[in-house]
Image 1 (cartoon, helix red, strand yellow):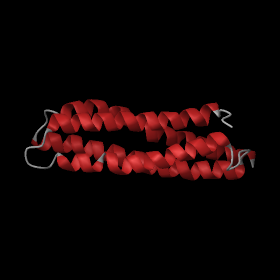
Image 2 (spheres, one colour):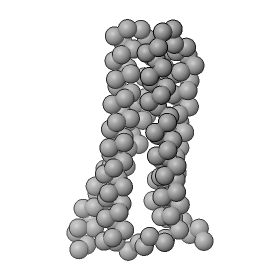
Image 3 (tube, one colour):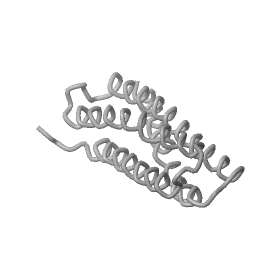
Length: 146
């Protein structure tokens, strides 16, 4: 049982890396979106969409492995740091659903304000990274909250 827990923990950690890491690649892409046109802009938008897609699916693995860690590990569902993490997770899911796709679609409109859209994407990336890092902090530190 201990080996199984360690395997789930390893999968969980890998999925955290896949969920957070790729978002840091987006900053130079957002910068290039301000001036890109045509095929170059399409390539940057495709990369952006792929990274969001990757993070979303890594998040599915993250949640699944997290559930298995609670089932097979020493933690219970009423553990305060776990409840706080779940709350932030649900907030981040709503944020992720609305933060990127609508803005990315606006780049395909006629005469898009690329600077405004790029700034909006940059802000959304930072907010999402901060939400992910807060959840990571809860997972690593496991603070006593109440």
